[in-house]
Image (cartoon, rainbow, N blue to C red):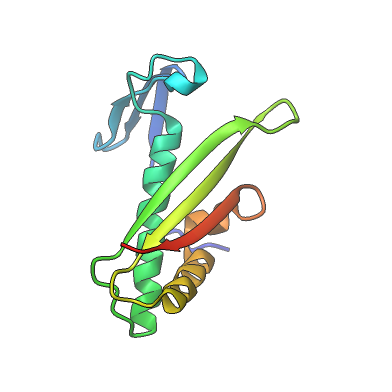
Length: 141
């Protein structure tokens, strides 16, 4: 059982992917638009961008936690997330995620070990495990 420390709330209105989304505190307040690659106007944000942003930030926090626990400095680190969407072959849609971890000044083996450990800690990773194809890579800065 999870001991909930925080709950985020948001509401979507309008035409779903061509609508609007707003968090209860107003910090997120965005028009949405279907991406051009999916036949839309692309003149707004989209759920995949929001998911990629959240996953990147959450994974970076998990990476920092793991590094602190192991007493490894990861100054200047970053995490990029790419979220893809497409038909899943069963009449619905599915996602893919690629996380790219950059940790300057750290050898590739140690960086990959930290990234793999962060993938076990990150709530987003735990939420999608077994349902979404997630690839975690370590890149040079």
